Image (tube, rainbow, N blue to C red; front, side):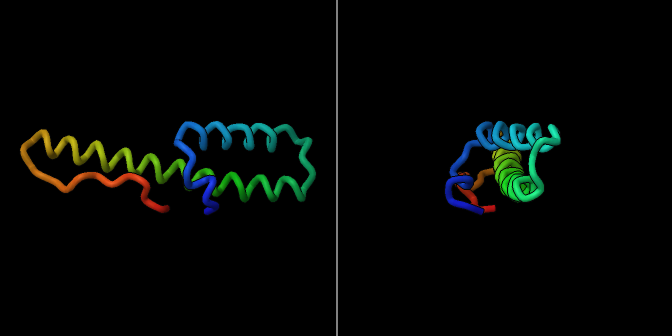
Length: 80
């Protein structure tokens, strides 16, 4: 994954991904560009999945902490 994509927020990555999907669905993209967009879309999808997984883990930690279990501090920025 490229460094610039790894630093994107979930919302920014999702917006870029939606733009790519819309352009691909338009049917006006040459095959070579279509392939490049597909690859970029896959990278952005991984960013989004990583951010969602981080959020899910954080929520689970907060739920367990609320129930009295103690956990180490959550570290965001996991490479995915």
